[in-house]
Length: 409
Image (cartoon, rainbow, N blue to C red; front, side):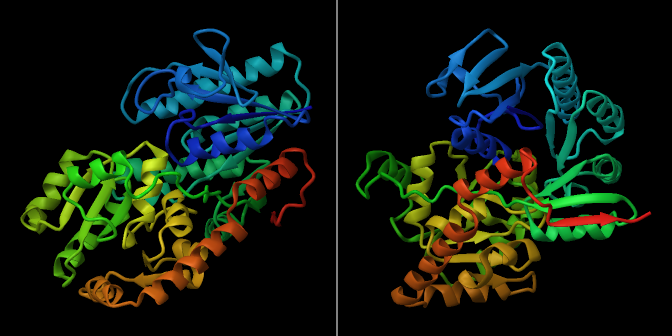
């Protein structure tokens, strides 16, 4: 049996890495050749309440079984952004102790994100002494995120370099990220592979007259099939400023429902600059964790606006392509790699997105339906969870030939 320890996600709550773990363990729960051990946050934001998970087996206050995966809860000091770093360190310590105490042979420790670079050399050596392998998923270009100051960005850049340097395998969920890794770190001996992020494209079970959906429309004064949406964290690099400014310039009579996380400081700053509170079409909507309701909202939206420019394969984009027929995406390599010719694209030039929204409003129903079909087919062919889980299984059981091997002295 291959034991795989996964560190870096909060657990199984809503989010990219968390959804990935939920689906990966679900698809492999009856596979006797692989056993997952999942680090989960015990305190702070984003923790999973395991008592609300289906078919969960509670072992103790700090351990439970979910999808046949051994889940262990790690408590760390709540030190703002530093909590995540400490959480990863304590998780890695737990993994190494568990491997040693249970005499586990040839384990794989898979670290999501690149937070603990300064410490990863120590842990990589320890993992190797235990007969294991250390794999890393670098996520996106964290050092480019505008929410971080110069020193934090510098830390991310240094940390990423160390995480890559010591990896036995770098798993990238974007072809563009893999290209970046191979180019940026071509002085290291690297093994990389590309495995995309998956997406759930099963149709919503909610009908148009569902009370939850109708209540949501009423709460935000929205009209069925007469609104655009955007889903994502309310941070500068997701280009909400451009999307709001351009939407306000457009002639559309439809509303723009922004489903996002709470960030009062950024919201206040943006409103002072754009005065969007004076435009009744702009609606800020609380984050939605009811996945069926979110599917319904996506399905019945007229269109989806996507402004993410930092990162790899974005979960919100995949969900939109799988459900929403008309998608207007920021033209950057990550997004074009995923959507290809199934969406419309905009750039940051003044008036560009406003003109695209006006154009989108004039599309025929046939054109919109055809775009929707192409988008859904694209997700089904390249990003289904069963194919993603199968690729991970082959990698974890060392049955996969890595797509790239870069060995430079």
